[in-house]
Each structure stands twice: as structure tokens, then as C-alpha cells.
Image (cartoon, rainbow, N blue to C red; front, top):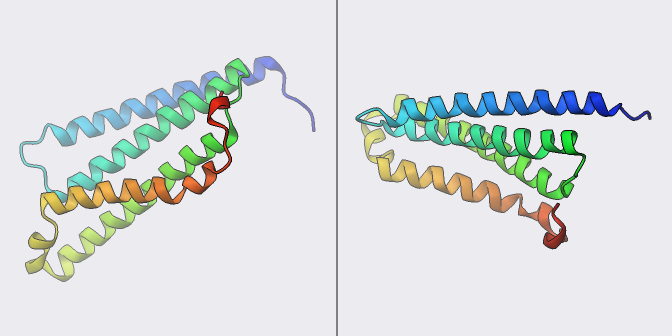
Length: 150
């Protein structure tokens, strides 16, 4: 296996940094569009959670972890990077599943939908998805020396 030249790594890192920042900005625009609405439908809370997950993945994993490692060659602990990436991916997956269930239940049981998906219940579900995603992937952090993350 051959090593890539330093210039190639730097260009790859800069490219990923730009893509991460652009992706984060797009997620910010989406979140702003949802938050500026006068009345936020419960489904939009899932959309907001989804935008936050993708923005965090773009900013933390792509822009901070991966691109800075390619540019500066200071490698973080792979377990921490893997934990963040997988936790955010699972959070995105579970949020997409919750969004799908929300839409299915709105069609299948329209009379009970508004009592099931109140704003409070929807926010609680979105928070539970985040907690579940990050707690179930915490097994990746077992044995990681946190004094030596960088």
C-alpha cells in the first residue's frame, strides 16, 4: 500500500472542509426555515431534529474530525470518530423511521393522530431518539483513554 503525497492529503482535507461547512450551512438554512414558522406542526419537529443531526454530522465528523486530520496529520482516537459518526447515523436513521411512522399513522388513524402526536409527545420522541442513538453506540467508547483523545 502506498502513501499519498502530503499535497494530496491537504487538498482532500480542504475539499472535505468546504463540503462540511457548506452542508452545515444548508442544514442551518433548513432549521431556520422551520423555526421561523408561526405554527410548527409536530412533523416539523422531526424535520428539525433531522436537520440538526445532519448539520452536526457535517460540522463535527466531516469538517472537524476528518478534514483537520488530513490537513494537520494530527489523528484523533478512531473510537471517538467512529462513535460520533455511527451515533449520528443511527440518530438520522431512527428519526427517518419516526418521520415515516408519523406519516403512516396520520393516514391510517387520522382521528387519533392529533392526540398521539402532540407537540410535547413529538419533542419527547425526538429527544428519546437522540438519547437512544448515543447511548446504544456508547459501547464503542469502552476502553478509550479520554486523556489521550487528540
